[in-house]
Image 1 (cartoon, rainbow, N blue to C red):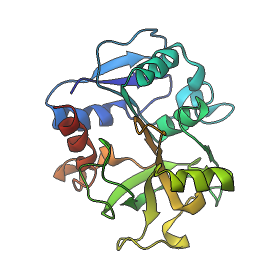
Image 2: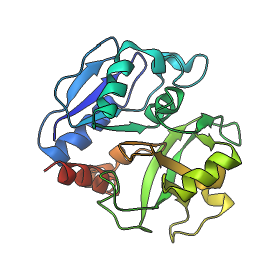
Image 3: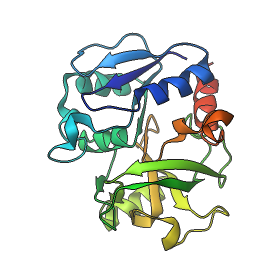
Image 4: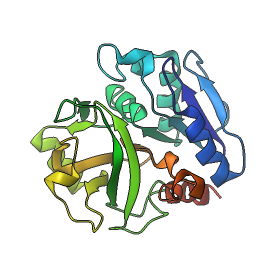
Amino acid sequence: MKAGIVVFPGTNRERDMAIALRRAAGTEPAMLWHRDTELPALDLVVLPGGFSHGDYLRSGAMAAHAPIMSAVRDFAARGGYVLGVCNGFQILTEAEMLPGALLRNAGMRFLSQDCHLRVERDDTPFTRGWREGDVFRAPMAHGDGNYVASEEELDRLEGEGQVAFRYSRADGGLADDANPNGSARAIAGVFSADRRVCGLMPHPEDLVDPLMGGEDGKPLFDGLVESFR
């Protein structure tokens, strides 16, 4: 699998993402600068976490208009796959490559803690490493992770299978105390309509090695590699 990681001013999770991709694919991902206007031959483009452009205006709003984003849109339109994590998810919603928006956490506090995510479908390259209904642990580190959309849009996402992950308890049950940022319907990640673009707020790339405290996030990257073999 040939992967590239987009780096914006303020990105700070590109090295974490590179470790996860390197461990899964056995090859070094390409680092792509936000001013680039063309992409090399790739299977996957990743927008990692951080605070692109200092999160001025809205999180991801300025990065969504970076020169490289035109190339990322074209890449997805041609059949490429795009993953956005945390700030990357915010950028993808601001760029209108994913539905909905990410607003301030319900408690108006930055959250740095582990959470549990329930896998809502297992028939995509992003989720094939799990089974539907599986629950895994992932670190979260964000102040603007409250996923919102209109009720009509939420119904459409549910009906068309575009919900990728939900915040849950360790047993998979949904509850307010397992949804710390207040996201609508406990949505932690979504797909585009064609399932080629996926965004989620927590950081699976930070649990891919026992030395990190576990390998809960590893199935995401292993599944992607398997899909491109």
